[in-house]
Image (tube, rainbow, N blue to C red; front, side, top):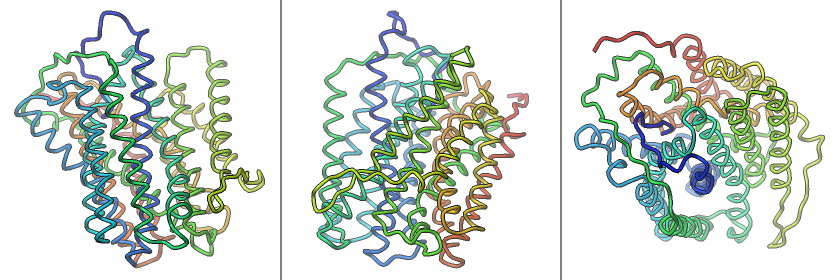
Length: 479
């Protein structure tokens, strides 16, 4: 929930001591990015194990992102009636609670593999997502206030860049663990047991680390308004719809990419190969968010800014390129880099992404409109073409999804004053789009095929163009 409480009181020792706490918080972003995108590996895995339809497989995202809606709704109801829970217990305790619930959700995969029931897997995912929701509510505003208010957006883009780094590693590590290390030569639910126990252990360990270190405490003196007056603000209501369709569009694309790659007319890849290239999709989002953190930061020298952005793009690409070259053959790891000729289209789209940032500048509605328009073009190419063009167009979408979230959120909470916290809670509820849109596309895919079903996210991004052109505009309200 990337928002800064209006009256948050910062410690008197200035902003320079926030570097270590901020680095700690960025690791939280990394972890929930990793565990969220593991769903994209789970969907084709469980689809094959339980012989599911596309609609049934999409229930994985429905269970996961449905938890965002339910937990956020409960949080909102408690906030308007009893006061903000995070303000009462503190950001640090909120983060620890979120981590412990995430760890519990991961450990529930163990009984799910024992009983081999799809419903138990969905329940485990719901618990896991409940923990991630609490982390979102606590860590996003905490990251925003760990520094100067005018660079909060830049800081969030940087933290979300590490979130995308976790998302980049998840398909690769998940594919290795599920299809190589623990598969024993066949795809079964048993291959999920140890990986998710490892993930759960990491969440518990991180909770202990957060508990043991000293983090700056912030006091929120803002009085949360009661009632639903915030819904009288047109740009808030339209922004809620924008968050719904953005998250829904992003999640549904990532959810069905591996199945898209498996088509003989596209790449004919198996799940493990598709997981490697899914890392490029989320890696593009990582690169875009790092660029966004610079583009929307406080750097005034445009030459230095553009050079830094170019350097970050190149270094980030090389990290992705090397990571995806790691191979596991019967327990022996080696480095087998993909020939550059095979990824030339990805490099081309990164150049387009860089130029789009230069055109958009630091203007949120302009970037939102431009990037959403490019995503629609890429989705159209996916539907109308085959082979490498369709393949890399699909992967390139990640780079242009990169900073849509932060731009929509910034526009939706603009000029709200004392209603900012209430609007933020409502916007977080709209993450439920990640639960609804995938099952819609799954149902469509069952009828017309996976490739044509990508018309569903096209409709989502068409709305984002409207919001970037007109919907974001603040209208005067009398309350």
